[in-house]
Image (cartoon, rainbow, N blue to C red; front, side, top):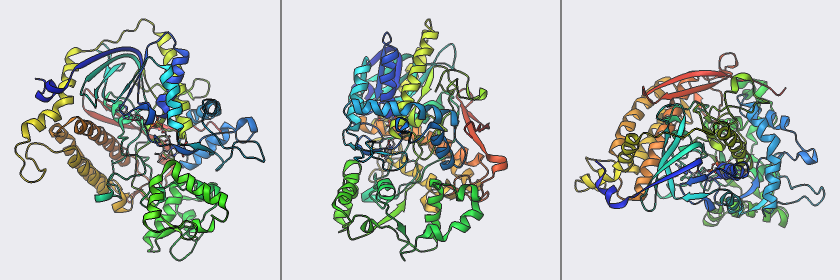
Length: 618
Ligand SMILES: Cc1cc2nc3c(=O)[nH]c(=O)nc-3n(C[C@H](O)[C@H](O)[C@H](O)COP(=O)(O)OP(=O)(O)OC[C@H]3O[C@@H](n4cnc5c(N)ncnc54)[C@H](O)[C@@H]3O)c2cc1C
């Protein structure tokens, strides 16, 4: 039976294409551009939950491109980048993927400049203005619309406001991709995409963990609330292998507004101290050496998680608030302008917060704090899919198909989707989208006769499932016992709050100083699985809430993977991101490996294993 509400709101649209790109953020736009270039005879479409003009983690614009080698000026070489990212992730990265991005990323940035992105130049050197070793400064308010325009021109159709809820596998071969289904979040149309290849670029996840901002500030997080981990959930549900899902990120940012610290620390050379004016990183360095060894404690730059760790130690010792001394840096009008522009380009809320709290950054320091954890694959962490590497670089056990193809045939990924390759940022994610799309076109040319076979009964079942929250609401809405409490359904928001509580309290959120152990994780998993069962009973009063219901569904899948991976890794690899209290140290002997998971859709079981970490750059 198709739900009453669905009959009222929905129509069905079938789309046949060669390549379906899911998500039109940075990686999706890169994939679109490159697919259009190599696959002129192919039908290429994008399905984007928002509108690609202003979608994704950095829809609002940026003040720096964080991944640029500068090879034409001999500033950095790909090997340097691999060493840097490897060090930052305490040794566990896919060096083949990183090298591949690094050797192509400069060309991407030069293209952005040709398309009209204003990049700042250093008047003395004539090179791009560096913010730090890997970052270059831009006037980036229109960064996203600029790259979206290139994407739009490269594909046959962009389906904006279409959220993909499930991928489809082939009727004859469940390990081969055949398309996807989704929902037009504005008019309720049910979309069925039949595709010969799919590139998932649907971004990482916020609101898995309870955020620091609750009540009136709810929704304010560093990683944007609209990215809900579809990149991972969609892949896991069809049995793709995932790695590093335990490698969640915690960022140190300006307190409450989450203003970025990069320009302040790197460019303006601001310092951070405890409440008593002491530069705490220096105080703790010997303890850190004893804790993680000199290899990581003395690494330059210090890994991001370890810098978090030092700050956390200081907070636990009762020496907060921690301050960043903007007032010591803004000693010229140029620097003051730079500081303000940094926020006005990408975190206006932080400037508003300054105003509301009477903070003048020229005279007053600002508080720093550590965020709740997020799950993503393109920043200073690398959760995501296990993908085939570039043939000319990757060790034999990292290559089984086409570049950036997951372990499901014809299913590719890029950006946050791909595991093991951190520090891609906007430019690297776009570049990885290009690499994935080029390989996807080659895959299609090598398999010209393949026609996806889709099981129509399965589509009907998914259609029923997709609209069930509307049905649940229609049926149960007259029995509300108090306020919004119903005996028949939970709202997406209630489900979200339950998820965030479980993750915060059992899987190392801010409430426990990011600390967990086997017993907590096992308990958390059992509570999460009950929540997963209850997802059948989510009730949505309108299409907006229906979207929220599916975002919650994807978030719960991501959370499950995070718990299972965290349970499996019996060490504390990234202190400052999370701690296993029962295995408090880095264990190089047993755990210098990737943790790998695969969900089996036919048995509903998860298989956990480890994969070798190859170091190909000396
Ligand atoms: C706060 C913050 C600050 C950053 N600052 C910088 C910086 O200064 N410089 C820099 O270079 N990089 C920066 N980055 C990194 C950069 O934003 C990411 O690396 C990049 O956006 C990753 O690209 P992506 O395509 O994987 O994800 P995104 O760009 O987030 O794109 C994901 C897309 O998928 C869509 N989507 C999600 N789910 C679905 C679904 N189910 N169906 C259809 N569509 C879906 C989303 O709407 C979105 O358009 C920052 C990131 C954050 C979070």
